[in-house]
Length: 158
Ligand code: ZN
Image (cartoon, rainbow, N blue to C red; front, side, top):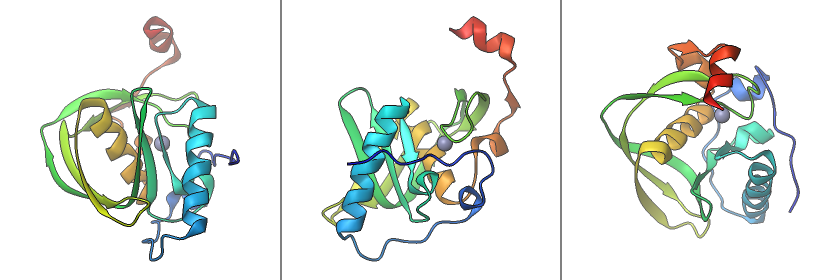
C-alpha cells in the first residue's frame, strides 16, 4: 500500500466528471488499498478516487473506527429528508461550511468482488456518501454550502 497525494482546491481533475469502472482489476484493488491508507493518514472520513488523481467512479467512506465501505460505480437510488450540517474536505483544507444534504439515502454500487451491494445510510454516513458522490461528478462542498464558517466559529467548535 502507498499513500497517494491528495489533490487540492480547484485542480482540474477535481472538476471533471469521473468515468464508470468497466473492469475491477488489480489496479482497482491497489487504488482502493491506497485510498484506505491515504484517508487514514489524512484523518479523513471519506475519499473519492479523483481526489488522488484517478478519474474513476470509486469512493470509500468510513463509519466509525471499524468500517470502511468501498463503493465502485455508486448510484443513489433514493434520498429522503433534508438537514444542514458542517462539512470539510481533504481537498479544501482549512475550510468548513454548512451544507444541506438528504437525511437518508439508499446507494447501490459494486464491491471489489464485483458484486452488487445496496447500502442504506442515515446521518453522518449519508452525508459522507453524498459528499463523495458529488466529488465523482466534479462538485465540491463549497459549491453547495449555504455559507462558509469563519475562523472564529471554528475555534468555538473545538
Ligand atoms: Zn471532499
